[in-house]
Image (tube, rainbow, N blue to C red; front, side, top):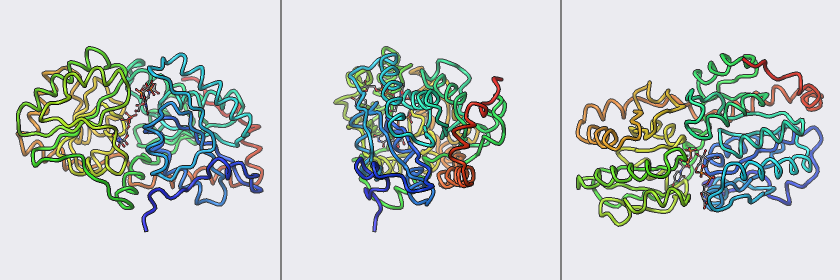
Length: 405
Ligand code: UD1
Ligand code: UDP
């Protein structure tokens, strides 16, 4: 029987139950779609362990796009801070998040806070935990573009989380080496693979979704949302993609992010074109089915750069930098940039050159084997499983931070 939608973490009432003796109360903080997708395997692995009592707090940085995922992935929520506002600015979002999360951490008194990735929710979760003297584990640690404001503000977010975290769960050897190079003690860094692969494999095993493609044409899956591209640049990218659709032999599917800034930039260029299907954000089952059916991915998404190579789908990354060079180095992805002509040329080449296509499609996935969450929980079990470790973790927190490189 499928496990899709079966609750794994306690909902509000159940999570208020007294802590079982010796249990490590672990607060997992998430606020956006990718954090739900990438933390769900960790929640599942913790719920299956006798040692951990997982408590999920959502900030509600995203609303519909987050809710859509939580039920499907079985993630029950103890507290929802519901911070999302229309066109939220980073400064006000950050202020609401640090304040709200600080209050929740004081009320819940977790032994450990887990954050994922590089969103403003993740940064504020780490910061609020630090202020409350609670140790932090960072899932998907060590990714870097080397350019502080690209992607904006994610590169800064992940660097700051790296200063605060006690456990750094790096998806690849490269990200682990990056952290050690920044002065993080090697014993605090664990290479795990990326939990997005755990989730993708789980969903493909457990459930069947419906692809959004409707024609027999070449299938191109498109997602765009990054803040640094919003405005005129994203509009110009949309115009280039319309020209791609005008070839006549492709069907472009665009599951459109709910951000009004993204909609304003892309809808005037792409809505209503016969070669383009603009759809609402897809739930993960349908998205996985759509990805599995497509021929080519055009994206500025982080997660999609990791998922596409797992299913043998060439990915053109519509950005000027990537924190996931592993896929480019493996030959599974190309960093195409945001220039309209460059995008058109790269997409055309892949669609028209079967050898180039086969090379990229066969390059393989450098982001793990689907057992990342297992490794994360194994390492935390080692560190918290010792008698008295919970208190020691709290007391030792100030001394355990790494020197500034
Ligand atoms: C955020 C993250 C980004 C991540 C992306 C995943 C930050 C600063 N950015 O970007 O790292 O890649 O999520 O998608 O943390 N909105 C809705 N409903 C929703 C979600 C969003 O209406 O379910 C609208 C709201 O008007 C909101 C806007 O989208 O103000 C932007 O959302 P926000 O979370 O600020 O930024 P994203 O671009 O989604
Ligand atoms: N995704 C989804 N439905 C969609 C678009 C994306 O489920 O309509 C999933 C996708 O599989 C990936 C994640 O959302 O796991 C990526 O999220 P997003 O692009 O919003 O954020 P990023 O990864 O760039 O932070």
